[in-house]
Length: 225
Image (cartoon, rainbow, N blue to C red; front, side, top):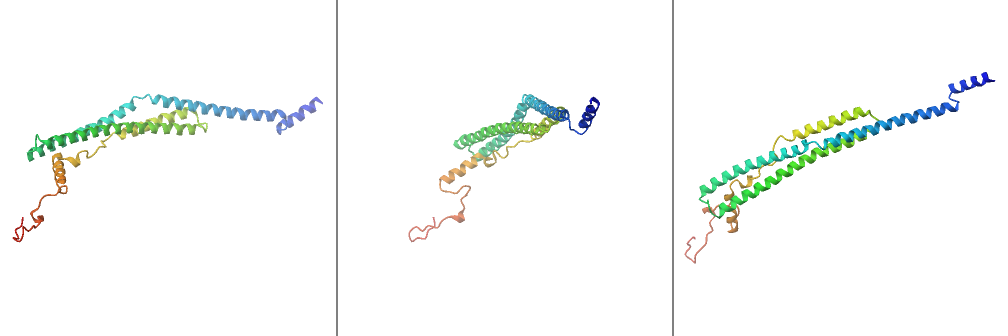
């Protein structure tokens, strides 16, 4: 009986008929899922550690300052050129020291201050763009980690993505973005003269032309005035 029982048990195990065989299969599946969850959790931990550490990178603030300085220097260059042109125009027109001189210099300074503020906003936006790219990359990698990819591979991908985003940010630091700040006021005194003419009833930039004079009769004399 003992021999027959052992034989039947052996055959049952071969064909998956024994109770212990089903239990072993369930344990193996649970173990596989447990290991997959461990890889996911470890991958997410590594990804967050890498990106949290990157947030302390002084390169972020340096990038913002570099972009701000680049544009601020160009504002100063444009201001210097516009100021020189304005001074020359005032001197040539004999308007130095008067109200037109005062207005033109105030307008030049106003536009200069506006340019400095725009330079700061451009620097802030450059920083925000870089940080947003990193945040999006973090979320994408966390989604990929749900597939149970090896944590070491996920860490490599995180470092590679951060390096790519850093290079892309540096490529944006190649030129100033504030153009033509003083183009409409190359000679501020000319603008002022035209505005004075407009207030006097003339259209802006209109010059008096003898051919445009009106014929006005003084009584019956026919004299043109």
